[in-house]
Length: 207
Image (cartoon, rainbow, N blue to C red; front, top):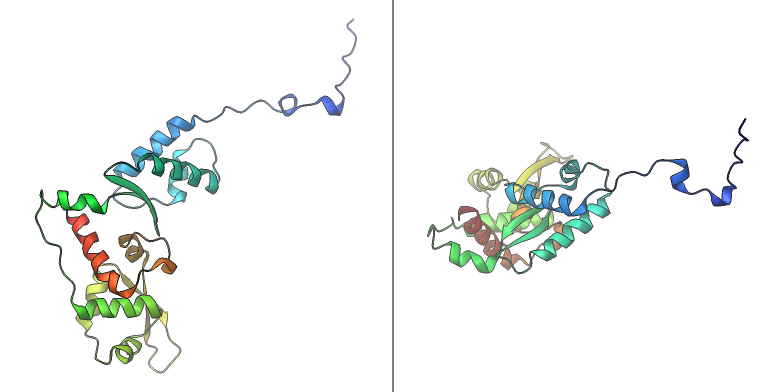
């Protein structure tokens, strides 16, 4: 009869003695999968979606580290991996746009001064009502202007003000931040730059 085996002292027990070793994920392959998903997506992809690509659970900071490293590996390319409000997305670099315009010499629509002023007021004073906008601009705001901004996906109704008539409160959307290559409202550029940036985005979209 064999003698019983004495248990190991607690100080000598390692994690591998308690539980089987879990297979380590192939990070190189996962980064290739991330890259493919981002290159083929027409919209920015948030971390919650990108996590679904991994066979093993990942923390946000781990995924962000991989994405940052992937972004750095594309620094010398004609496209870049950018983090915007809605997630991560590959985008054409601005200095490449002038060359792409030769393929489709289509001029992007230019927004009127009234449209850009209205957008700027909403962006920098949100949430605001139509009456607030008219008070700041000193002129009436036409329904066409607001419709233009809503159709483009740059503004939306976020509630109503507790005042007579319950006027609607307007604010900017994540789509506007995405189109400006921004992650948060705190990164909004000076007022004078908004129109130029939006026109550049339209050119990139139509290329």
